[in-house]
Amino acid sequence: MSANVTPTVSVTPPAAGAMTPKLAKGGSRQNPWLRGLFYFLLVVIAFYMLFPFYWAIRSALTPEVDAGNTPVQYFPSDATLSNFGDALTGGVLKQPLINSFIVAGLVTLLSLIVGASAAYALGRIRFRGRTIMMYAILSMTIFPQIAILGALYTQFSNWGLINTRWSLVISYLIFTLPFTIWVLQSFFASLPRELEESAYVDGASPFRTFWAVMLPLAAPGLVTTGLLAFINAWNEYLYAVSFLQTADNYTVPVAIANWPPATSGSAFAQPWDHIMAGTVVVTLPLIVLVLIFQRRLVAGLTSGAVKG
Image 1 (cartoon, one colour):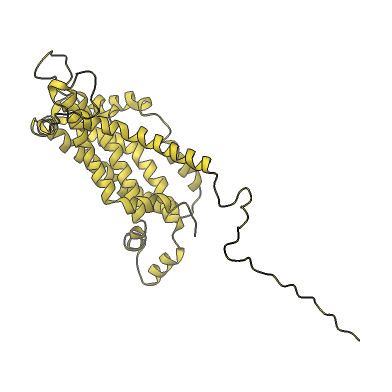
Image 2 (cartoon, rainbow, N blue to C red; image 1 turned 180 degrees about the vertical axis):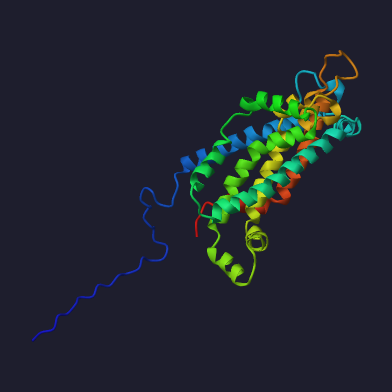
């Protein structure tokens, strides 16, 4: 009786320095033309996004006497910082900056308090009509702002809120609150249910569980939604110019749009050097906030991309 013998096949490894075959189409190697096109598009997009801010800085550094000269210099030879000093000390931006901080801060705080509570209920509690309520909340963000401007103005006039900060806070919450609820509910829904069960076993109340256990875990989402709510309230112009009537209640977008005319020359001349200096000044707080919360912001934007 003969035994079956399995033949062995020896594989000789390629010699050192031997040429490896090119990867098939779809492999890890990229076409150099496609890579070049990719980097070219990145440069074009970066230039498109950064050029307005560069032009604002360039105009802010240009002296008033050279602001309207042609041809335009891409960087003024006699650059000056006096425009920034005039924008800060002239009284045009002092009160609007305070008003914008108050309005944007209240909108952010109320959006996070109310939005986090509602998002926790929608993300962790199963009840009839939950999906319909979620889509109803989301549908509030698709309406253009101008569609409800007339109704809001009439209502605020009846309440005596025209030319007050509260008219902006209430109107901004109409759009920031649904976005906050929709984003945060996905954060709470992705958290393990065992965390709540452990807290209940330890004797924690539902509110204590939400405040001490679940809310800290949703910190990336809170930072992301809070920062976006602050930026939207800081930059909003349509409602601010419609509801605010006196300069002492202006926010920064309205104050910049109504900048006093130049002190020299025609009364209708626009002081673009001072306007651009003011634009740079009111943009710096947003840049500082983004840099401070950069890690939290990236974590909040990407945490919902992968389910684990």
